[in-house]
Image 1 (cartoon, rainbow, N blue to C red):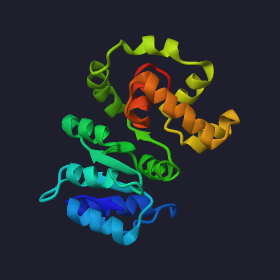
Image 2 (cartoon, one colour):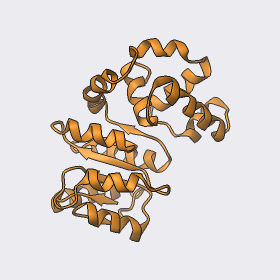
Image 3 (cartoon, rainbow, N blue to C red):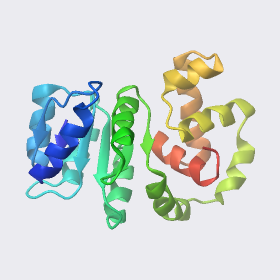
Image 4 (cartoon, rainbow, N blue to C red):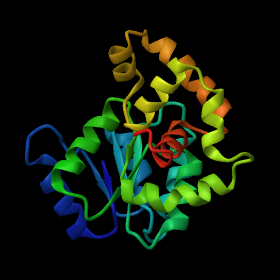
Length: 208
């Protein structure tokens, strides 16, 4: 599902995403209100959202969408000059951040990773967001790594790579439910609100 107020951008994204046959665009929207309606109508596996749209903006719509217990994974489409919007989307709990100039293969892979339960973090966005995320922490970031067990470190590396709980579990020989418990413990120890924040911190510490 694509939400962007520029018809040419939506058309271009659809062409790129559907070119290989692995992704189908089931709906499009030109603003946040239309996005929420399209999500209800089409039940997409992934939603890509531009944060700057007229009438009902992307962040306002994401605030509603992310609060739903059955919300599909959402990723923000952004540009370099929208750091404040991206930071707010992170607080809302979106699972991905993508720049609009990303390579076609990167976009397709990102959608598939999101559908599988992973997180998608463009490293260029990570570099810009990490300082403000770390500034809100009570302790210096790397010192918190000493609190983690070896297994928690393995799980954190998986989060940094954007892996889903299922993928982490398969690699480590753990049940998905067990990985979920490790992730919950990591969020508490790292002072992160969600797995994407934890992944951002881990990437900033060079764990990806």
